[in-house]
Length: 315
Ligand code: BDR
Ligand code: CA
Image (cartoon, rainbow, N blue to C red):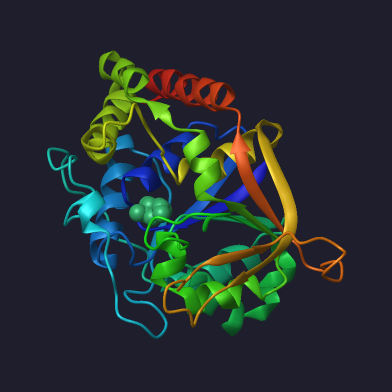
């Protein structure tokens, strides 16, 4: 059993990742969810996750984090997620629940330090909360098993030619986290794309129960971009780190040095994966695990099995 805290900007794919983690509570214990500005304003993404938690009737505490990057302008991804950050779910009732009164970094510190076991952090958004957490309370590092993140790319980006959105959004925070020496696992864009869920497969969720139908509505909106581009599948980005925690054997990866570009004009937030090998560089003392590919069949098996199971539990 792994104790996890999820940090993200829900966000369609963030919510799908949350559902799949929750549906595997025999393997992953979600201790809490912290929010950060990214796909939409932080107040919106906090409301979104509270709404989902309420819909399921589960008891997972949520704490709101930073509303803007460390030292840059906030840049939302409304183009993909709509103004609310979770468009397509507007028919689901708003929640009366409130977020925890603590700021996300205090909440994270408390949950990590109070637990006799180590905690794994799953990040699905810009790394603002995690950077401030590690800088302000460095004692947490010892108690973090690892940070498994949807972050960056090995070769090509989505925001810029070489930069992925979460890293582009707050590159200064990303640099702090990448330099922290905490073990990092990166679910890169390449890994996420290799695990895309076919549009035809997504249709099968429509006839499922309460949780499958929620996932269907979420994916329906989220897949517009794929449909408009004539693709047959959707990369559900933030799902990938959760699948890694459930089935690491499905992934191909390389352990290597990775640096964050903070100054680049064309490469802001690029995850610079250094795989030159010993001819050029000293062996890296602090390699990051860079996920490059996932067995798509294996991923979809877990995905659909989880929703079938959840439909029985949450009626
Ligand atoms: C990442 O950016 C966000 O839009 C998604 O939620 C995901 O975390 C993909 O680049
Ligand atoms: Ca996200």
